[in-house]
Length: 222
Image 1 (cartoon, rainbow, N blue to C red):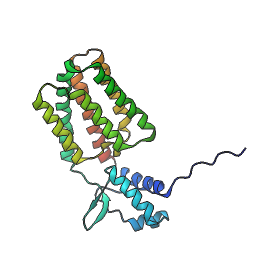
Image 2: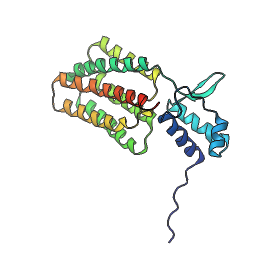
Image 3: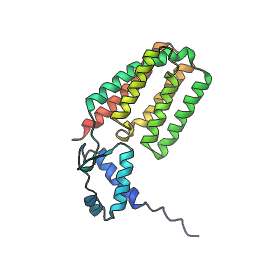
Image 4: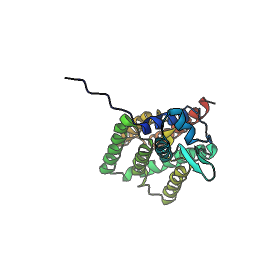
């Protein structure tokens, strides 16, 4: 019996991994123009897998297209991102704490299921899908906030965050595993009837740790 042949990595996948690695290592820094022909020549492939890889990276928020320029590594207003994340952490912590008396067992089970799906996703990481599940998880916990003004501000924060960065986890994938563990800790606090202030601070610090991870990744490589 012959051994099964190892699966062949497609040219598109190989190109995607090659470009993504250079973006995450910041060899290709924010604003760096991605010349598709040059990448194709470097990897000895046609333009087709390069375009496919770049479109995939665009969906993850790592690449953007600019008129008359073409594809380039996505840029971000880091100050706006940091400010939004810090503000969202504080507001979401308060909203979750206020929502505690109104959360049902069904709500917590839903959040648990979402976090379990995020944990499974760590095996074959998809940062955009992970980010979507992350938002759903948090919304389950704060959506019952009885203060409509705070709830509205939290919603605005999430919308602003989506406009600044489609997926933070594309840039700090190692943060995903820590995030899942922190979600579980937040759920444990809620299920065991922890003080509202403890829950509020857990949610706030959870968000702020992501800010710190992003800041460290942004400055770790020139």
